[in-house]
Length: 377
Image (cartoon, rainbow, N blue to C red; front, side, top):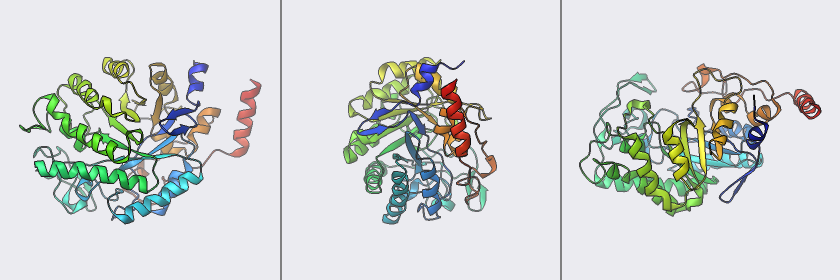
């Protein structure tokens, strides 16, 4: 049975730094591969995000801060003037719908391929992705990435900072630093992908250093109140085996605790897990939590899981697939209206508006009837 007080909290306003969010429901960053081959956001992306402007906050999909950081084909970028101009069209459309947006900065590290970026991927160590990767010619064997030198590390940190400045110039309210899901920053944290013996490898205190430097550089570039950090403890996606998960995240959060970040975003959060509970106790700032949902999207798109996370101490709840299929997800959840189901075959790599910007919105008459019924119940 739904706890009414907790359920109502999903739709309460929330103050996130300088932003006033109309509700606590966040659209999670979702890779959709609808940018141009050059990384420039396409007009359909402005339509797609503007349709979802009723979310308390939209975190736009993982966007590469430099050319070598590209993961898959048709991933958006934010390191050239034309990228900034393309994203400006998106943020203008969302702002016209009274929406608010952050941009996720995502460097793929070893999750990349020369057929996608034209460059050999960089990573903490020359350990290849243990699976094939999507390219314009289909799935291809992964390549052995080049181990980053000290100069590469300094350049990459600077690229993240410049990408954050570019994002603000493009109209974003802030950025999310992606240290999750097996991408570059997560690769530095994880024992099986970071085999370095210098100041960035070995003990946990060294493995968190690169993430700390990126976060601080980005915060210095645009202000910490505009910066979020995304983590995914114990997530094994993209061949990750962290090792001492129970040590990594307390050390990382201690390292960045004094930065004053806008939020910490925990992916696949489980309120019953001791590590999540420890993170909530020790993280003094805003905590955004993304619930772990089954492979088949629940009928409530994760609403009940989100309510449980709020009860466990989360401040904001991010949902992904529910927003893919329901541009008006916030209204549908508020009214208890039926939800569209995700057309899985159109999620990634196929391009076009089908399964992207063509999901129907709630019929106005039905919405009015549901609202009236709820008021009279």
